[in-house]
Image (cartoon, rainbow, N blue to C red; front, side, top):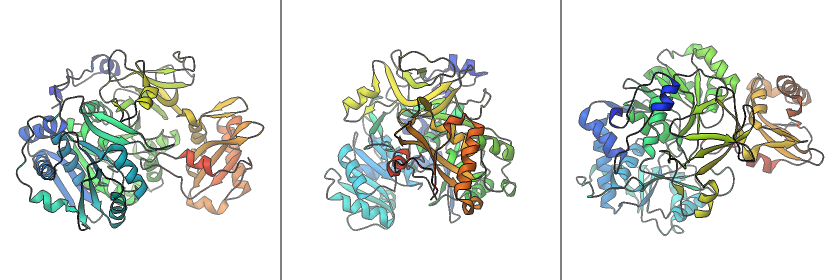
Length: 558
């Protein structure tokens, strides 16, 4: 399959990869027809999707099965008037109908808008009106259904609502029944141009209202690197990415790059994360490749991994937030495997990665993908020297990378602010070492300025995470009349340490930071919490932590 799209598929070194990776871009490319249906034509019995759930149910779909189900779904969508350019929101958790629906929308030239089941009535109204959504396909969860029902009277563009069950209210289509009874699918005479809008994401919203990130039909081609050269997949891979389908990481790890590579995508459809249950699934089904946010790895290493047979596991990756080196080292100690980090945004595909030909450096995001022309620039707009902090930028003046978003939909001003004069500014701050590896510092808005020092949240979090008491933590800056800002640590403790909460533990953690990093970076304020506020994508909402903090500047435990 990859030979159809790449001038060269196999590479001998990172230099070879950087210099010789090139995609052959077809005219009017459509992932559903040109990849999925092509697999179904040439290798119909090839395993494509192994779906499992918490109740022990499992269903292996071949590419022939995926073509059949996506065709039926497309025929149903056609029957209710969904056409090229129409926008359809998919609230489908990890249910199998997500794959059938997104491919069906691709086949119609329509626009898929994956969304989380955690949206409230207000969230749904905002999205429906901002994007002019025509239909909603949702899980039949009573709470989700009730939010959508209440939102409909204030969402005038929504013409149809569809439930996958078990609850299918009056006035809603029954997805499974309608798909099963759909007429034969008739492929439209013309489906799409490469530049047409195909996928729309509302960003996680760590600050302000979510932005609408618009991707075109070439976006999947940008994920060849994600699946083949970061996840290191092949025809024999059974790959598991832990992600809800409402998060962009789902198409990063459960669809595009994986099926370009011919891998079998493993889906574990669960409601609430449990590290032990996940490990049992990995053991039972012999997962070969695994990708998860750092938070998942943090909870997995707290388990007794000697109880699980993970001998089939060959490759591990992470993205979503920077990974603390202490987690990397513990995972390697327990499994013998590196965790290869990557970096990207909702607006991009994988922009930095630790690729197979490279040494892994714990805590580093790796090096630029050959698809992107990346640099690190300081406040003067000059390239940073090794060790100097700067903003990660993507140059687009010579060529536009496959996978870079087209625009913030309906917001020309915001699009120009982020992407102007041939430069896309990511808003992420990093350093770069002598070998060209990038190291995450934080979002530009999260960098703390205290007594003239610039303190990156991640470096303090790294220090705290090396203490056995700390399961998770978030570093923020809080106002201080003398220093401008001081460092605050919001910490989730390991269970056995919770009874020790008090001034002595606060001092112990502060001294630990003083001895493991520069003393001026230690947290003068420490708060203990049961959990950290996060977006659906698993990113810590530091803006919420800052908003709740009193500006007294006193260390406390609560």
